[in-house]
Image (tube, rainbow, N blue to C red; front, side):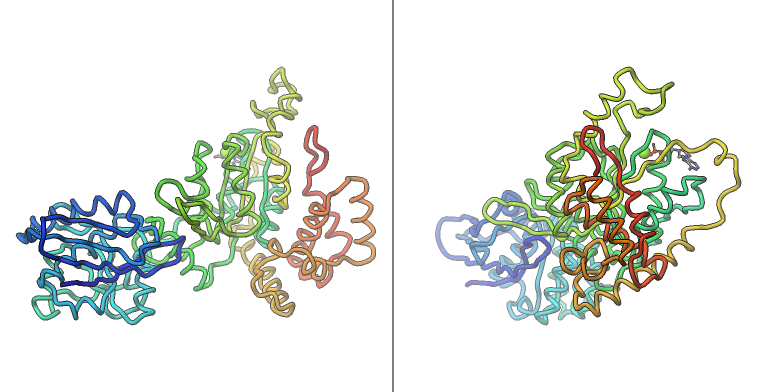
Length: 509
Ligand SMILES: Nc1ncnc2c1ncn2[C@@H]1O[C@H](COP(=O)(O)OP(=O)(O)O)[C@@H](O)[C@H]1O
Ligand SMILES: [Mg+2]
């Protein structure tokens, strides 16, 4: 007899329905899986065989053929164990076929028949819900599946528990409750930073307009401190954003506490991270750090130390807000709309410009060091600031009065202005100034006569590229929004111009 059990495959964070078809026929005993399985799926065979033996249900000595349909979709991951085992059990008549019809199943089997957590339970639960089916997932992830809101979630801890549930008329397993949201990560406060007024102002502008920011300064100046405080200035995520972020984290197998992600992510990968770890992909398709930072902050400390290929791979996602990684015979796209905060020393030793500390190779070494970052990469960063060493006088002062909450309030106001403006411009897909470009940007950030005169003059003198020109407009628009000013004036343009820096050997950036 042929049995069918429904499960899913993932293409990016998209869920594709997959059917596990099982046929048991007379013939030489065998157990074959067909339908583009990867290595983990092929290994399923051994886990399913061992798990069934462990619960006292040996495989029948017949010819067992498993087809994962549609055959042209690549099947990756270990979550096919459970649906394959259920397919075999259904074909053997242990589990009733009509029961299996109402479910989508995924989970990894241990050799003793236990069920281990897998990636992607949340999107699978949402997909199952959409087609009016329940979800069968590993016991540890019932709380994650329950967030999808569907009624029929079964979260057994082992295969045996699931069989007993079906045999016992469906009363053994109770529906899991959504897992409680974990305590918010403690975000440090801006109050801890003494002095550094320019850098704090730039950070506020970055938060208000969603701009990428690059901080350059000697070691110990407080660059990392500043970066860690950015999430505390950003407005909370909308429900839709939180769901989107949670789906990515689920597919990556990194959903903390099995609950929806409510707080903007802050990711700070080490500079030794490989390209797949950073942008996604690799042997098993997984979202990378840039996707885990979706709707949050990606902090790249010591930017020039990252491998060049990895940095260049960031260019496309910085522009489009998503990353497309190549698979064996297809592509997977992951959302990656993150705010980049990059920090770097001005040169390898870090003390360029300090005659007492700088090494003997200065200033030539600075040029080499900074040239490790390509022009197009710099081009995608709206704000460039110098973070000088903190003044000892500032350190001995009492902490500043203004805390992150006060700044976050101004940021929220500026963001609300932007959202309303993009709505009237019928460009709802744009959420902040940093995402505005081309015609839309020219329209919303057109400066007054004085402002335009200053910008034209500066553009000529500094030989600004078209991209550079637009960056100034974008930042100036955010500065005006922070002030609540309807139009972009000369002062806004002037401040925006101050967040550009001269690169050694490369002119103004
Ligand atoms: N403006 C500042 N106010 C108070 N402490 C500071 C300041 N700048 C630096 N520090 C101290 O110096 C340490 C190093 O700062 P860090 O942010 O790691 O520097 P960087 O990343 O620029 O090398 C911090 O942990 C903090 O104790
Ligand atoms: Mg640092």
